[in-house]
Image 1: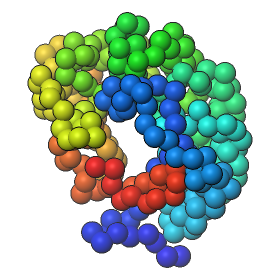
Image 2: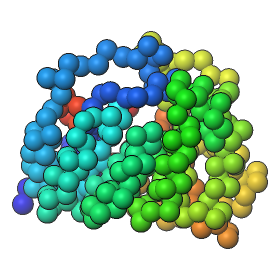
Image 3: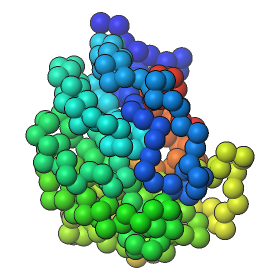
Length: 274
């Protein structure tokens, strides 16, 4: 069987598919307050087109897919698409990245779809007022409810926390504390400081090293051996059920072993989101 290999000799085995460009939140590091010019619905890939694209890619060696957006659960009939995609016998895992605001009622169904392995929940603050300031939406209670339900479910849960200078850096170790009694992975993501017009001003550069130093100021961490293609550098803490990771999204020390390809909601292929 032919394999999908890029010009650097990296075999592609993981596809990241945006099922929509629409989102119900307006996170300040991601989108302007008024939103973006969303594409007309007729220009979005249909679910049948998405299924066909994923099928072709799996025949070329891709065995994992991550579904993102925008917010994937904001697209009508997304759960039906998940069920459809589960019939692809060449897929080992279907993973989802979500902001959690529309998910709680679907968790039991997600658990029944055996190929759905990992849910990445984006949550940048544990305080409702700060969460509202970051996302420009008052949905923290629903997102936290989703977090609690997912943590008790059979799904593997990762929390994605974008570290934002001047907003949530004082919560880094509060998030680490969650791993004490919860079998979750908390992953801190370097902010990519772009606003559509170039880099935005930040009070401090919260790089991978600075984030790790902040964690080490309170915890004794040990490096966890991760998959070669992992986007995060992962750590364990003694007597903690969960783990902690840092994703160097801006300083980019993870490109050598990248095995991913990206597809936008309109069908554009990108070999890198950077």
